[in-house]
Image (cartoon, rainbow, N blue to C red; front, side):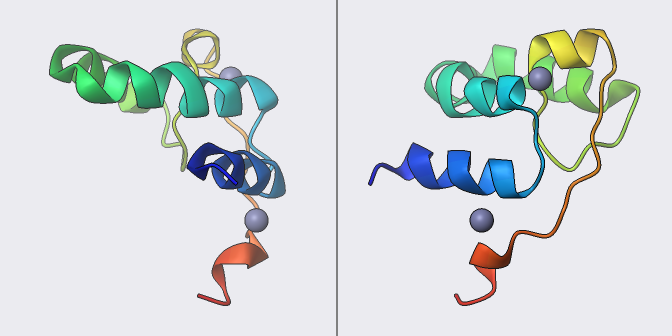
Length: 78
Ligand SMILES: [Zn+2]
Ligand SMILES: [Zn+2]
C-alpha cells in the first residue's frame, strides 16, 4: 500500500471532499510541498477566510467550501 492510499482512505473517513483528497494526495504532495513559494501561497489562501482542519483544493478555497471533519478511528491504535 502506498503512503497516499492511507491518506485517501482516512480522508474519506474524515469526511473530506473527494476533490480535496485528490488535490492533497496529488499536486499538493508532488508539487506544492516542494516549491516553497507555492506552498506559502496556498497555505495562506487555505486559511485566509476559514479555519479548515485539512488542506483544501484550490476550487474549494475559491468557493470557500469547508466541511466538518469527523474523527477517524484509524489513528487510535497507533
Ligand atoms: Zn481512517
Ligand atoms: Zn475540494
